[in-house]
Image (cartoon, rainbow, N blue to C red; front, side):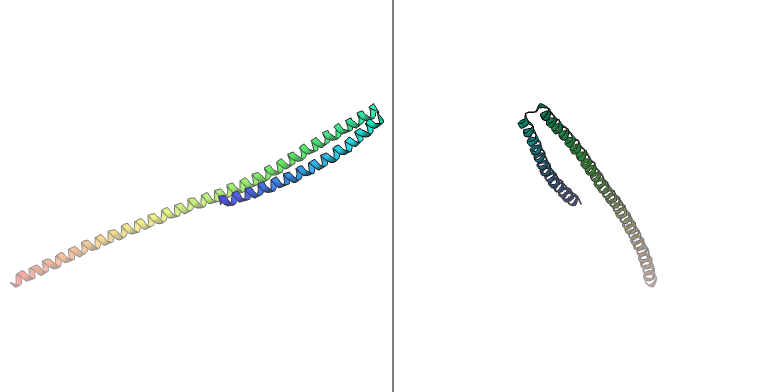
Length: 156
């Protein structure tokens, strides 16, 4: 049970790591592309030697960067919420499975204790009956012996 859980969590962690790596590569590609375009715009503005154009270019770069950071944070929060939701569901299933196992173990122990008590009662009853049978046999043997002894004495 624990090995299955470990294997499941390990596979889950591997998938999450792979997704993070793919997302990081995509993020790097987008940043590179965005920076390349913005660098081209900045160079074009510098080439024109226009302060206003340069200011607008850097302002646009700052605005795009800020928008990208907000979007990334929002995506990260959504991913964290999904992971938390999955983790809570997994934990609930695990706890439910543990509860079922605990209840099963409790009832199994109870059934074993009842069976042992029943066997003990049967053993005690068997011992009592064996003892009673032995006592009756001894009484019967004593009576036969006494009767036999009287008949022997009376015949002599």
